[in-house]
Amino acid sequence: MSDTRIVTFTTDFGLNDPFVGIMHGVVLNIHPETSIVDISHAVASYDVFDGAWTIAQAYRFFPPRTVHVVVVDPGVGGTRRPIIVETDDYVFVAPDNGVLSLVEMREPKFTVRHVTAERYFLQPVSQTFHGRDVFSPVAGWLSKGVAPAEFGPEISDYARLALPAVERIGENSLRGVVLKVDKFGNLITNIGEQEAPPLFTTAPPAVSILMAGQTITRVCHSYAEGGEDEFFAIVGSSGYLEIAARQASAAEKLAAGVGTPVGVVLGG
Image 1 (cartoon, rainbow, N blue to C red):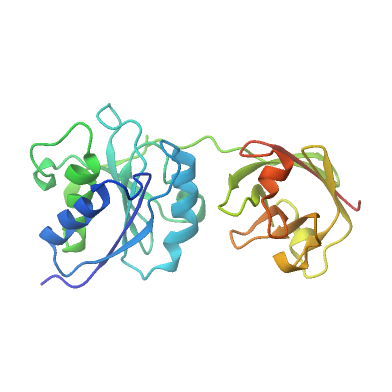
Image 2 (cartoon, rainbow, N blue to C red):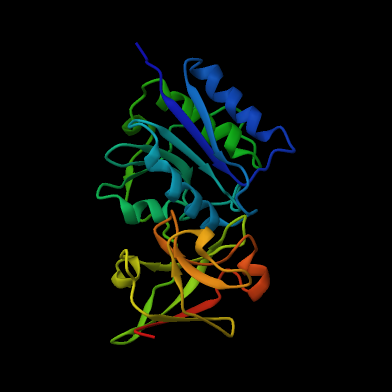
């Protein structure tokens, strides 16, 4: 007998069209006891990395055995494969385009299967809406208790995103980039605790952070600590160093965005 499972959805579909509601309906038609949670449908259109970032920030805050559906799929109708991924605690359903690359970086177990069992799809399968006809029904059957192994063979040649690396320039200097701009205009970099441990302590040392022609020298513990018309650094909830402005968009003020270089010199 099947039990209650959680299925989440992360897409770039927005909420103006009926796509999201249709996917919910497909899952509930297969397994009405499923609990459905929307993580986000505001992923930037066609932006696989933005989808990867969104699911990587959210998935581990759900109970074990949650099924996460991620549909950011600019290759729909092409040759990319539908996949199921199993980690120690979660199952993911997504296109094979690297959208789970950041999840893989966090997880010791990452087993990928090519979904080939078309009996679990809605028929006929549309060439433009695999979220409805492939990913949602697979999630519905997973939530009902069908084992991932029933959907297809394990594979190792799945797609991975080429992620920007932090470059160490000298003993106390490194260079990163902006990975993400959030709704508030905070510039989230790829510099984490592993790359710059001193900045992630309660008493960070003197630092010079170079971005878009500005030199930033303050690391704050909260957004409220930032002064008026000041750019400052902060360790955000994502676990990465951010550049922010108090109650303002640092991205707009600095004319910076995804890919903007960030230089860090420890010790000022």
